[in-house]
Image (cartoon, rainbow, N blue to C red; front, side):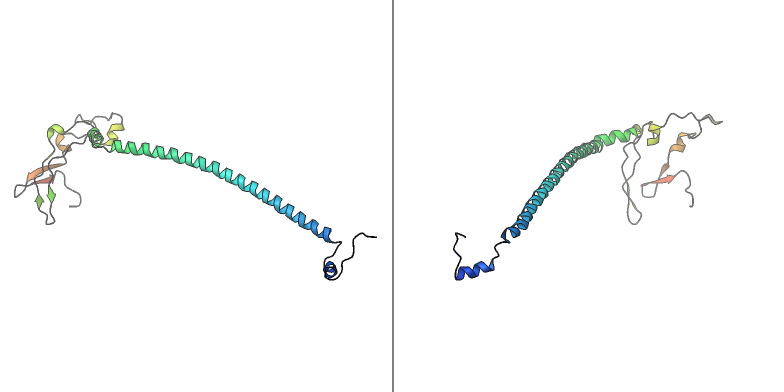
Amino acid sequence: MSSKPAPRGRAARLARLIPAGRARAARTPFVLLVVLLLGGGLLGLLVLNSALSEGSFELDDIQRRTKSLTDEEQALQRDIDAYSAPDALQRRARELGMVPGGDPAFLGPDGSVKGVPSAAPRSAVLTGPRAPEALTAAPSTAPATPGGTPTGTPASPAATTPAATTPAPGGALRSTPTTPTPGR
């Protein structure tokens, strides 16, 4: 028979509540569940780690690209600063045929002229190109007109003068256009 004595009293009542044969069968699904949860957790960590590594590589690439774009921006800003320096602006204006202006005059709200305007000094006038297109255009080989000048060029230096100045009452100079304005 069995070497174990049978429980009595309270122990016998507790022993009847716990089934003896099913203890092993109930433990197997629990062990499988724990193993599946641990395996799923490990796979999840592996996927998470891979995603973080990929994000780290992308972050490095983006930081490298940001650095190169920042360097390019700084180089462009240096170029802008060099082109907008007063000396560079003056040189470029002279290349375009611009000259320093004379004394300015201002119009008051009532139409009165304040100040005495003067033309640019003759010594400052250059014979270089007048427009940016003239810097890049090839020399003109236009046919000559019967007067001996090529077409598209003025016949006299007076035609290039945009306005003549005449003394106005009160000693101020006023600009008078040499050609009539259409519509007036």
